[in-house]
Image (tube, rainbow, N blue to C red; front, top):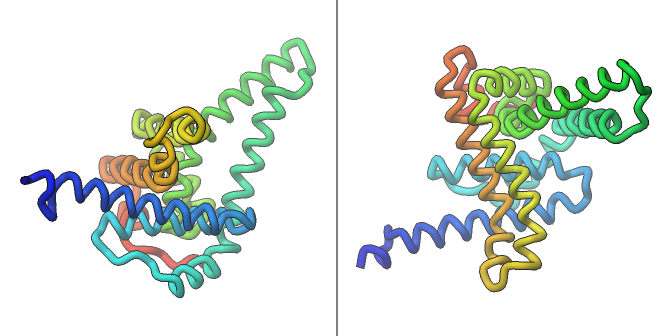
Length: 218
């Protein structure tokens, strides 16, 4: 009886899956123009936060205003991540100068790549709160240094989700498609939870700027 009760595990699981599914589908549709993908990702994070706090989801009008307000401010952070990823890939896969310089380029690229992987997920979560690129990157870097295990978990979750998407779509019958539909929202919720936990433990980061109400971007 408990399983099928209004507050039972089955209905709670269905409610959570449904929320992840429709927010993930909306995120995908809003990301199709590519230029709107950063703002759409911030929208996805904001929706997961509102749901976790028991607040109503953003409606169509609120969503349009949210995207319009965050469209341009989100581009610098996205550009930083794309630029860093490109430089790391060039350093790892591009032509090597050979000799000690080659090892220097390789070592620098590996260190930069690992640092970027640890910082990137949380920087997006923090930017959704602060609206400031430099502040988000700095806070994410400090959090990753102080709680490396949580940063590794967040990075692993994002990488695992990206790797699992084609496998779920092609190799898992019946349950693969429902899991795939909810994957972006579920991943965002996990990354947010890990970021908030790290921010709660670290006392030198202003927690209210990371896990409290939204800060209007300027």
